[in-house]
Image 1: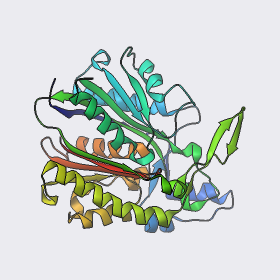
Image 2: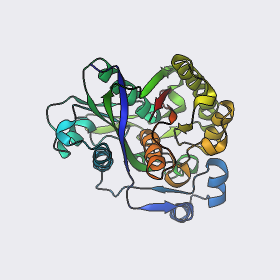
Image 3: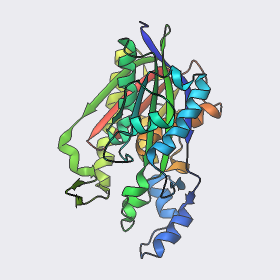
Length: 325
């Protein structure tokens, strides 16, 4: 049994259809919804997002990201002995996206399950995989965040429909004799369920309630900035490290203002903040692994550096993972 777990490969995938703010604004205008590139950029920092084709599911995006992560790690499908998928937009009610994706990858027999913590999902999934590796339950885990949020957007609500996009990110997490994941910190507070939710369900062959996303943007912003700082500091304390030990901050890519506010609270220079929200929008559970992979493949993040990953999402859930790459 190895005492540590370490990321050995990253991967990501974006559906081919890219919508700039101008293109999305033009589409919304045909439905009587007025917005503009300037309005979106000023409030969110988002300039474009990707939408999946109607026949493409979360598992399809996740498979592509997983293949790239496994290739980067130099592992074969048969080497994987654990699959955890973070998603809020599953292919179907059940089985899990993890099981569907497992079959598409040609893997059989290992445990595979989904984690539902919305935009904090990848941080939750990575924490679970880390714990399972440390207890000897797995040695090579595939951890994936994948979403098709375009399916649950209300395109008559300009305050939410301009924010989200589709995509997937993945990592291979392996047992290691050297430290990789240094500390984690997870939280949830269900009293805030109503500020970010999709208040619908399926019953008797019908959709009950509202199957589209609802969000109180100001309430989410206020909560997010505070809890992200708290989670980061708690994680640092567990690892016995300081703010200055962080080489890169990779927060959930929801809103540039939230991200910059968190970096300031951690006294981190903005050039150490990984930003992809401008090109991807908010991809929920996929946003952190997507941003990680982009930064690794661009050469910005290098082996041996210390990363702080942190997410916040509906639930209300939040958490952080501190790791050496």
